[in-house]
View 1 (cartoon, helix red, strand yellow):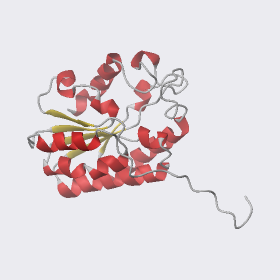
View 2: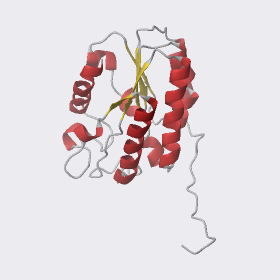
View 3: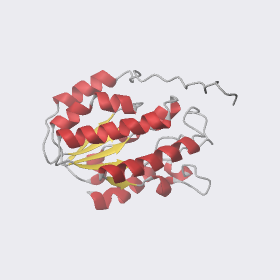
View 4: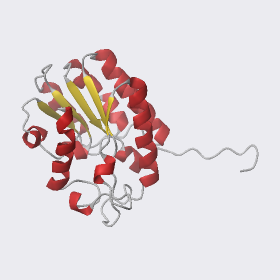
Length: 210
C-alpha cells in the first residue's frame, strides 16, 4: 500500500434492530424475574428453541431475538441485569459478521456486555459461547456463509476476553464443525439455523454447566 493511503473503513450500521425487536424487549420486561433464572441471551439460534423444555429446567429463560446483533444485546442488557439472574449464557455475533461489523468492534461489544453484567449483577455467573460455523451448501443466508475466517477471529477473541474477565467459555464451535470447518449437515436445515439434533448436541454440551 502506498504511503499516506489509508485502508478504506468498512461501513456498518450499529443502529440496526430486527423488526420485532422492541415488541420482544417489551415482552421480556413484563416477565417476572428470579435470582434463580438461567438466561439464554442471543439471536435466532437462541430464540428458536424452548430452552426450558429442551433442558428440562424450569429456571431457564429465553432472551433470544432473531437477527439481533451485539449492539442490540447491549441496548437491552438492562432488562437482564435488573433481574440479577444466577447465570447468563451468551451467544451473539454471527449476524454482526453478516452485516460487516468488524471483528474488533464485535469483541469490544463482548467486553462491554460482560463488564456491564459483572458491574450490575456481581453474583451472576457468565458463560460465553463460541460462534457456530455455517454451511454454504444451502442458498438461503448467503451473507452468513463463507465467513470461517471472521468467525475464527471472533472465537479466538472471545476466549481471550473470557480469560481476562475470568468468565467461562463454552466452546461450541468444534462440536458443530465438520472436517472442512463447515456446520455439520445433520445439525442444520439451512446452513445457519439448527435442527433438533443440533439443539440436542448443544444441550449435551451445556449439561455440565447447568
